[in-house]
Image 1 (cartoon, rainbow, N blue to C red):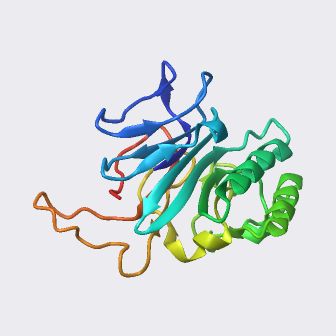
Image 2 (cartoon, rainbow, N blue to C red):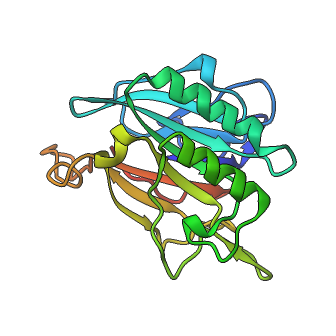
Image 3 (cartoon, rainbow, N blue to C red):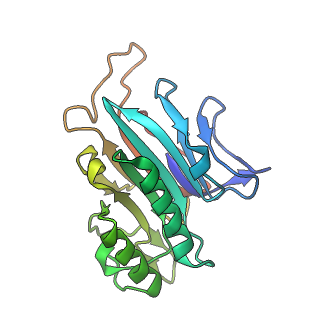
Amino acid sequence: MCLQEPYTVGNKLAGLPKSLAVYMSGAGRKQAAIVINNKQIDTIKITQLSDEDTVVLETKVGNATLLIASMYFDINRPIVYDLQKMQAILMHANGVGIVFAVDSNARSTSWHDVLTNKRGKTMGEFLISRQLHIANKESCRTMFWTSCDASNIDLTILNNQAIGLIIEWAIHNQESCSDHNIIKYGIGNANAIIQPTGNKGGVRYRGTLQSFKGTSYKSWSSF
């Protein structure tokens, strides 16, 4: 699970079982985290690329190495600051697939919002110049909503090497107890995405990633 603006107590994620592996970084208020509920996943945090607003993990998906980045772009600071962090991750990847799960606080019709603001224009130009791709699909549901507004500011961004690894992207219909909806997608190929692993304890699913925000962690998917 890639989390942005998670609920924390004493600078630690609250409401999660201790059996889960939680990755955060920095000494300040945590605005990004990644949670894994399968200890068999070979995962390393890239410390030099991680901070309170960004967590970057290197993991294995089948025979492929993949970087997963959970990022929060603070609306009160220039977006170029966070785009520079994305650039640093791209340079580190050196040909490895990357999945960015981002609360961008940026709006653009390029990712199925109803308008494009200044932040969205800047981010769109950055994505094009770096040959990055947005996995978001048009939907009757929006990623962010309040009683006054709705927008699509939560993005799943891929580099060329990761395009073939992401399938079945969707805005989940499960209640998130937040003003952001859950985004869910598979990592793997069509034959490996949702298959029983043969364990006696029941069916576990491989290659499913959820990205969401807020105070509720009611369910999660096994890798």
